[in-house]
Image (cartoon, rainbow, N blue to C red):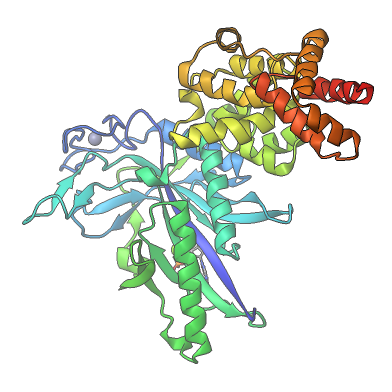
Length: 480
Ligand code: ADP
Ligand code: ZN
Ligand code: MG
């Protein structure tokens, strides 16, 4: 490949504060349109904004988690533009003194190396209302309930090199936001939005190419697909000698057509005529708040991942799955309070439990298999009371019914036959019923061993302890 792509992201994420950024309206969704508003978030004359302290704390928390610097002195600015979703005709945001800057987030690459992605800045701003063009045949409709909800904007350096790195970065950021419990960061629900900047250059070039901005993706997967398409488009233009056709513009991702389409040429900062918000004077962040944030105890996804790998001897892949959601990580560690084989627990959670959850779209918090119940199942297997195969059936039963594993085993008679006398009787029966096969086995047809095992399993409905059966069968065949 002669070309490489350069990617930088601008992410907006909704904060889970109780109230909006500059007024007392609640941050709640799903109410009747235009009921969760007040003179402040609607910009009525004479109303004044008051900064929500929680928004500052959340911004500082993310700053700490991304090793960012804190702007000791910070301020808000007005970004002016006219569009119906913005009731005031300006958005309160931060321009030249973002609360945090110069940080980084580490991502785990395929080759197991870590890569630092620079965070240029993190700043606070208010969300807009929502315009609906498709709910009414003749009119566009507007709901201002979302106007004034606090957002953090996170801008990365152009450090990402491939669509898959961008995808990993977004997952890592989402995971961090959820660990800190400051945003649910669900892109499908519009809680997190991503603008993508991408350019292409020849490997030997010294300067980045012209960047294009992509909008309108509604999942991380869509971001990846949009990037793949756009990178191809730009490379094709360069190959054809039409480099000048790559313009600094905003393009829209069309999910159904799987391509990007021009939306508008890029506006410049000057077009917004930013100026300091006159109703909120520049301010210093109080030391008490900074101290409070520094004293909060948390373990980030990356730290947890490294600890899991080391402490429980898991592969990086397994650890990264188990730590992707904080609730899942807690679940795993709760199982280990009752059952101490970390590797087995990880396998069962990743390969069995998560599959069941995927099938009906449930999250770990919503399921009836408590960590204690999973631990009980694992113990039953570990103590040879049930086979691994029955274990899977048992997990499914517990998942569907919420009953205690031990009760289900009793009810269904799933206890493994491990008793030597009982097993010996069953094996003898099978051998007697298959005299022919026994003769052939003795004459060298070794593969019939599997056939006998199969017959024994059939007779016991899969409940014969495989290891013991194997040993006993060998012994009895020798004596034949
Ligand atoms: P603008 O002035 O157009 O807002 P910025 O320099 O502020 O541009 O960068 C905005 C975003 O675009 C950042 O995420 C940055 O990393 C990214 N970016 C900047 N230059 C490039 C480039 N040549 N190719 C891809 N992304 C870029
Ligand atoms: Zn309000
Ligand atoms: Mg910029």
